[in-house]
Length: 136
Image (cartoon, rainbow, N blue to C red; front, side, top):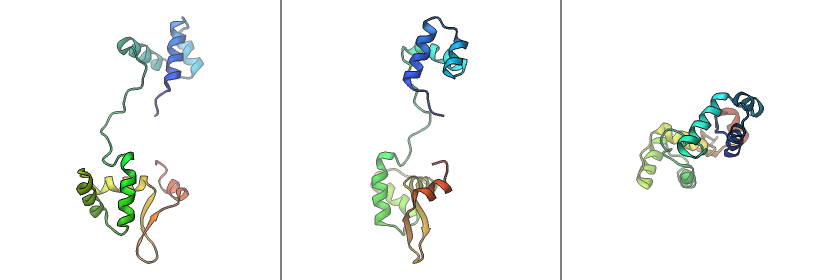
């Protein structure tokens, strides 16, 4: 779930500080009372309503590195996932599993299927990608 905007958070806090009951503020803005309590507590502790960073580590193939991965895919369209992982580790110093490489390739919209000539088909159409992988 995405974090609420900073603007909405500020409106919630402003309404509570103006003396409106928290339950009423929650009803008006369509959020839970627990959310309002959390924002009040966060403002008192940190003096900021900014969203906290998402937990977990960074992706092995970041969004900024997608052009490099696409260039690698265009240079070696018939390579296996293991070969792509090895080249990625050699070029970028980051080892990744074949599953990680497969997800990164899928995020770019590339397919691993072969065409009629036995070669990798390359990028797939966005509508096909959305149908097959709705969570992208």
